[in-house]
Length: 116
Length: 114
Image (cartoon, rainbow over all chains, first blue to last red; front, side):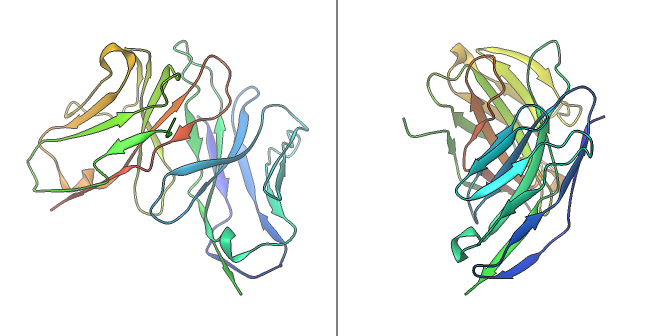
Protein backbone atom coordinates (compact mmCIF):
# COMPACT_ATOMS: atom_id res chain seq x y z
CA UNK A 1 0.00 0.00 0.00
CA UNK A 2 0.87 3.67 0.00
CA UNK A 3 3.35 4.97 2.55
CA UNK A 4 5.22 8.15 3.46
CA UNK A 5 8.54 8.32 5.27
CA UNK A 6 9.75 11.55 6.86
CA UNK A 7 13.00 12.35 8.54
CA UNK A 8 12.71 11.90 12.26
CA UNK A 9 12.75 14.89 14.52
CA UNK A 10 12.87 16.88 16.50
CA UNK A 11 14.74 19.42 14.45
CA UNK A 12 16.10 22.48 16.25
CA UNK A 13 17.37 25.44 14.25
CA UNK A 14 18.44 28.96 14.96
CA UNK A 15 16.41 31.77 13.47
CA UNK A 16 17.35 32.53 9.82
CA UNK A 17 18.85 29.07 9.32
CA UNK A 18 18.08 26.96 6.25
CA UNK A 19 15.50 24.22 6.67
CA UNK A 20 15.20 20.89 4.90
CA UNK A 21 12.77 18.18 5.97
CA UNK A 22 13.11 15.05 3.87
CA UNK A 23 10.09 13.13 2.65
CA UNK A 24 9.97 10.05 0.44
CA UNK A 25 6.96 8.07 -0.60
CA UNK A 26 5.79 4.77 -2.00
CA UNK A 27 2.66 4.73 -4.11
CA UNK A 28 1.26 3.26 -7.27
CA UNK A 29 0.49 5.53 -10.17
CA UNK A 30 0.83 9.27 -9.85
CA UNK A 31 -0.09 10.52 -6.40
CA UNK A 32 -0.63 14.12 -5.37
CA UNK A 33 1.75 15.27 -2.65
CA UNK A 34 1.16 17.65 0.24
CA UNK A 35 2.82 19.27 3.20
CA UNK A 36 0.64 20.09 6.18
CA UNK A 37 1.63 22.05 9.28
CA UNK A 38 0.21 21.63 12.78
CA UNK A 39 0.70 24.31 15.40
CA UNK A 40 0.31 23.36 19.08
CA UNK A 41 -3.28 22.62 20.01
CA UNK A 42 -4.56 23.14 16.49
CA UNK A 43 -5.64 21.08 13.52
CA UNK A 44 -3.63 20.60 10.35
CA UNK A 45 -3.25 23.39 7.82
CA UNK A 46 -2.39 22.78 4.19
CA UNK A 47 1.00 24.39 3.57
CA UNK A 48 1.62 23.49 -0.06
CA UNK A 49 0.87 20.87 -2.67
CA UNK A 50 2.03 19.43 -5.98
CA UNK A 51 -0.10 17.28 -8.23
CA UNK A 52 2.32 16.05 -10.89
CA UNK A 53 5.98 15.32 -11.44
CA UNK A 54 8.34 18.34 -11.43
CA UNK A 55 5.66 20.60 -9.98
CA UNK A 56 6.93 22.95 -7.30
CA UNK A 57 4.59 23.88 -4.49
CA UNK A 58 5.31 27.04 -2.54
CA UNK A 59 3.75 29.07 0.24
CA UNK A 60 4.98 31.43 2.96
CA UNK A 61 8.60 30.96 1.88
CA UNK A 62 8.38 27.16 1.98
CA UNK A 63 8.97 25.14 -1.18
CA UNK A 64 8.86 21.48 -2.22
CA UNK A 65 9.40 19.89 -5.62
CA UNK A 66 7.70 16.67 -6.73
CA UNK A 67 10.53 14.37 -7.82
CA UNK A 68 9.14 11.21 -9.32
CA UNK A 69 12.55 9.74 -10.17
CA UNK A 70 13.55 9.79 -6.50
CA UNK A 71 9.98 9.51 -5.12
CA UNK A 72 10.67 12.51 -2.93
CA UNK A 73 9.00 15.76 -1.87
CA UNK A 74 11.45 17.48 0.44
CA UNK A 75 10.36 20.65 2.24
CA UNK A 76 12.73 23.62 2.23
CA UNK A 77 12.82 27.15 3.55
CA UNK A 78 15.71 29.53 3.15
CA UNK A 79 15.37 31.41 6.43
CA UNK A 80 13.22 30.07 9.26
CA UNK A 81 11.52 32.18 11.90
CA UNK A 82 10.47 31.42 15.45
CA UNK A 83 6.87 31.45 14.24
CA UNK A 84 7.65 28.44 12.00
CA UNK A 85 7.94 26.21 15.06
CA UNK A 86 5.39 23.47 14.52
CA UNK A 87 5.00 19.86 13.41
CA UNK A 88 5.23 19.31 9.67
CA UNK A 89 3.54 16.36 7.94
CA UNK A 90 4.20 15.07 4.48
CA UNK A 91 1.21 13.34 2.88
CA UNK A 92 0.10 11.77 -0.35
CA UNK A 93 -3.20 11.12 -2.01
CA UNK A 94 -2.65 8.08 -4.12
CA UNK A 95 -4.91 5.30 -5.08
CA UNK A 96 -8.13 6.52 -6.51
CA UNK A 97 -10.83 4.33 -5.08
CA UNK A 98 -14.13 3.79 -6.79
CA UNK A 99 -15.62 6.02 -4.14
CA UNK A 100 -13.27 8.85 -5.12
CA UNK A 101 -12.26 9.64 -1.59
CA UNK A 102 -8.75 10.99 -2.26
CA UNK A 103 -7.86 9.80 1.20
CA UNK A 104 -4.53 11.00 2.53
CA UNK A 105 -1.65 8.88 3.79
CA UNK A 106 0.53 10.81 6.22
CA UNK A 107 4.06 10.52 7.47
CA UNK A 108 4.70 10.52 11.21
CA UNK A 109 5.52 14.21 11.30
CA UNK A 110 8.66 16.20 12.04
CA UNK A 111 8.71 18.62 14.93
CA UNK A 112 10.57 21.83 14.20
CA UNK A 113 11.72 24.19 16.92
CA UNK A 114 13.27 27.50 15.93
CA UNK A 115 15.19 29.36 18.62
CA UNK A 116 15.93 33.10 18.54
CA UNK B 1 -17.32 31.04 6.52
CA UNK B 2 -15.46 30.06 9.68
CA UNK B 3 -13.83 26.89 8.43
CA UNK B 4 -14.39 23.40 9.79
CA UNK B 5 -15.74 23.36 13.33
CA UNK B 6 -15.50 20.46 15.74
CA UNK B 7 -17.19 20.03 19.07
CA UNK B 8 -16.18 19.39 21.78
CA UNK B 9 -12.51 20.31 21.75
CA UNK B 10 -11.76 17.97 24.61
CA UNK B 11 -13.60 14.98 26.04
CA UNK B 12 -12.66 12.87 29.03
CA UNK B 13 -14.71 9.74 29.52
CA UNK B 14 -14.62 6.58 31.57
CA UNK B 15 -13.91 3.30 29.87
CA UNK B 16 -17.10 1.69 28.66
CA UNK B 17 -19.01 4.92 28.13
CA UNK B 18 -20.29 6.11 24.77
CA UNK B 19 -19.14 9.40 23.25
CA UNK B 20 -20.28 11.42 20.27
CA UNK B 21 -18.37 14.11 18.40
CA UNK B 22 -19.73 16.64 15.95
CA UNK B 23 -18.20 18.19 12.86
CA UNK B 24 -19.53 21.13 10.86
CA UNK B 25 -17.74 21.32 7.51
CA UNK B 26 -17.35 24.32 5.25
CA UNK B 27 -20.84 24.80 3.89
CA UNK B 28 -20.12 24.37 0.19
CA UNK B 29 -17.90 21.31 0.65
CA UNK B 30 -19.60 18.06 -0.27
CA UNK B 31 -16.78 15.79 0.89
CA UNK B 32 -16.23 15.10 4.58
CA UNK B 33 -13.56 12.98 6.23
CA UNK B 34 -12.75 11.68 9.68
CA UNK B 35 -9.18 10.92 10.71
CA UNK B 36 -7.63 9.74 13.96
CA UNK B 37 -4.28 10.96 15.24
CA UNK B 38 -2.43 9.35 18.12
CA UNK B 39 0.49 10.94 19.94
CA UNK B 40 3.59 11.19 17.79
CA UNK B 41 1.89 9.83 14.69
CA UNK B 42 0.37 11.24 11.56
CA UNK B 43 -3.40 11.18 11.08
CA UNK B 44 -4.97 7.93 9.87
CA UNK B 45 -8.04 7.76 7.65
CA UNK B 46 -11.24 6.52 9.26
CA UNK B 47 -14.11 7.27 6.91
CA UNK B 48 -15.37 9.44 4.06
CA UNK B 49 -18.71 10.93 3.10
CA UNK B 50 -19.79 12.42 -0.17
CA UNK B 51 -22.86 14.44 0.69
CA UNK B 52 -24.90 12.17 2.96
CA UNK B 53 -23.48 8.90 1.66
CA UNK B 54 -20.74 7.13 3.60
CA UNK B 55 -18.68 5.76 0.72
CA UNK B 56 -15.53 4.49 2.34
CA UNK B 57 -14.54 3.09 5.74
CA UNK B 58 -11.11 2.11 7.00
CA UNK B 59 -10.53 -1.20 8.73
CA UNK B 60 -9.59 0.99 11.72
CA UNK B 61 -13.28 1.75 12.08
CA UNK B 62 -14.36 -1.12 14.28
CA UNK B 63 -17.96 -2.08 14.95
CA UNK B 64 -17.93 0.21 18.00
CA UNK B 65 -17.54 3.23 15.74
CA UNK B 66 -20.33 4.74 13.70
CA UNK B 67 -20.46 7.91 11.66
CA UNK B 68 -23.35 9.73 10.08
CA UNK B 69 -23.89 12.76 7.94
CA UNK B 70 -27.61 13.40 7.76
CA UNK B 71 -28.71 15.69 4.94
CA UNK B 72 -25.12 16.05 3.81
CA UNK B 73 -24.36 18.82 6.28
CA UNK B 74 -22.81 18.22 9.71
CA UNK B 75 -21.43 14.85 10.70
CA UNK B 76 -21.26 12.89 13.94
CA UNK B 77 -18.81 10.22 15.01
CA UNK B 78 -19.93 7.95 17.84
CA UNK B 79 -17.76 5.54 19.77
CA UNK B 80 -19.56 2.96 21.85
CA UNK B 81 -18.07 1.17 24.85
CA UNK B 82 -14.91 3.25 24.75
CA UNK B 83 -11.55 1.62 25.44
CA UNK B 84 -8.29 3.21 26.53
CA UNK B 85 -6.90 2.55 23.07
CA UNK B 86 -9.49 4.95 21.67
CA UNK B 87 -7.68 7.87 23.29
CA UNK B 88 -6.59 10.08 20.39
CA UNK B 89 -7.29 13.28 18.52
CA UNK B 90 -10.22 12.89 16.14
CA UNK B 91 -9.94 15.19 13.17
CA UNK B 92 -12.62 16.16 10.72
CA UNK B 93 -11.86 17.63 7.31
CA UNK B 94 -13.82 18.74 4.28
CA UNK B 95 -13.09 19.46 0.66
CA UNK B 96 -14.99 20.63 -2.40
CA UNK B 97 -15.78 19.05 -5.73
CA UNK B 98 -13.93 16.41 -7.63
CA UNK B 99 -10.38 17.71 -7.84
CA UNK B 100 -7.77 16.81 -5.30
CA UNK B 101 -6.91 20.17 -3.84
CA UNK B 102 -6.28 19.00 -0.31
CA UNK B 103 -8.51 19.30 2.68
CA UNK B 104 -9.43 21.89 5.27
CA UNK B 105 -9.09 20.35 8.72
CA UNK B 106 -10.87 21.28 11.91
CA UNK B 107 -9.04 21.75 15.19
CA UNK B 108 -9.97 18.28 16.33
CA UNK B 109 -11.55 16.65 19.37
CA UNK B 110 -9.10 15.22 21.86
CA UNK B 111 -10.53 12.13 23.54
CA UNK B 112 -9.08 10.75 26.75
CA UNK B 113 -10.46 7.47 28.04
CA UNK B 114 -9.67 6.83 31.71
